[in-house]
Image (cartoon, rainbow, N blue to C red; front, top):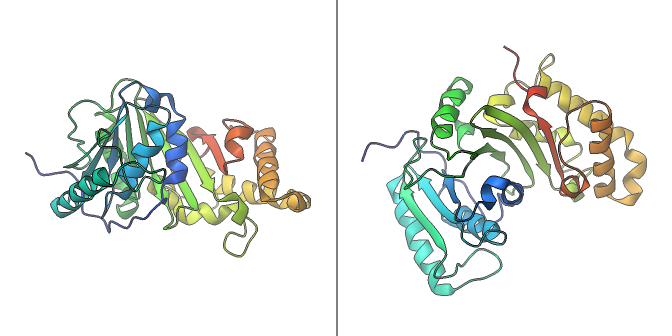
Length: 279
């Protein structure tokens, strides 16, 4: 087997860290293909995120298969052992155990995605954050080349507790959207005073572009401005205020996707062209 492509990352992970991106992926057509193969690329130092990903996707697609890939053989061995223990424990609602017949496995691999067949979805969270910006496009291209027709690559970053996240969704044509996902009921608190707190968790392709003159900077400035304008709604709760903020962004001309059913989850998705780095 060829040496996996990539570098060993810190491997930081934790229970529920990726719940927001998992919830978004579960709503995408690619993840609902019967028997879909979903790759959890760079799952980290334990099996946790892969087991949780399977548990969440299986609610709407019982035949889904999750393959966790890591370039560190020790992590693959550990995750495989954890999987065996989870199977013995039986199913739970929290993803810490798994049904004996659930289709989950772990293998050695990197950006080349050595899977038994082309996956419908590749999730690569908190992986490229540790690379240089100029490396991103090449790794995106490598992963996109492995997708099944109609497949989806989801690449981004979250904070350690999963309360602040951002990711890019890509298909065969390239990047198509940026999604920001926040724990809504913490918005307006000292921990999360304004939506632009996501700046430090932007995907690697954008994190260094949050400067005046760049599109993503304009998005975050306008998002904070809209949030401040909706301060009178604070008495009705942060959720109502956030939904109004997202609606205000859409009405002002930003290409916002989705509707209230997504917004109430703390999401804001905009077309990639609206935030793409300037040449």
